[in-house]
Length: 415
Image (tube, rainbow, N blue to C red; front, side, top):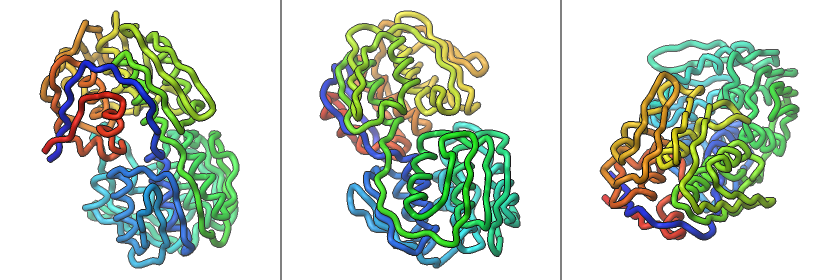
């Protein structure tokens, strides 16, 4: 099993290109099940989650060819089951449910797994599909859904779930009549999916607002589409500049997707300059403390909570980080403490008392974003940090050690 060895204490500087967004690529790849025409996706990140959904699409009958940095797919039904051995490793596998039922009238999808960061029930997905006319049964750990043809409906989501909004939006594009999704999630990745579906011939209005309207069509065509930049990867490298008192310019990113992260980093004393497609981050001093409360977009992203906590460990004062999205997303705290951090958990909040320095130690990644926080802390720590279970990191970051190495980090992958 791979590990990362980091010798910390180096100031990072230089330019780094941001990869395509994993959380946009996954639903758009699932959407290719809605057509038998070829789909060409560009700027697809080379991460393990993309490999997983590509394997799942192959299991369902798609021909998936990797043409770096893109993917070409063509879908013809061979099966309708998403098996446990694939779905258990990645929660986003549930995204094939809506397209399969919409196009083929049936699906059997294992209940999903993924990072152990808290309960993320799929009941909103299932209730929405039932509103569209699907019959849903749970048996043996699988979701079984059937419908001759889905019919448009009006629905209210109890929570603005991202994957739920995406799944129901994909199901609705081939439904008969109009579907209205109220209290929909408004993340940029949903807008990217709607844009891709629109290129295929779908009729969607309101993506990126709480009310999404979908006029069903009888079929969809092919697609050539470029995946949006990854805002969480960009935010992670912004913190890398801050925690190493470095100077990093991010290329091919979308600054408008980073406003809350940018605002909080500026509170810590970081200088940030924004362009049309680039962001420069400079830090010269020890960070100042901050207060963060995670929330659905456009609030502070839960996927950046762990990274900013790593930065707060070295702040000149006490920071308070409150997690309001997932109830079990502080598992990285004990690992940061092993590096010398001073963190106390009180309910949904972490009280982070800044220390003068961190010290290298063996640590273990517990989930995708927690692994990124340990890398960031290791970059700033004195001595050697060895991070195990970095397969979590590989799920969502494209060749992180290579990108950081080009910025001057002493980091390498070891067996």
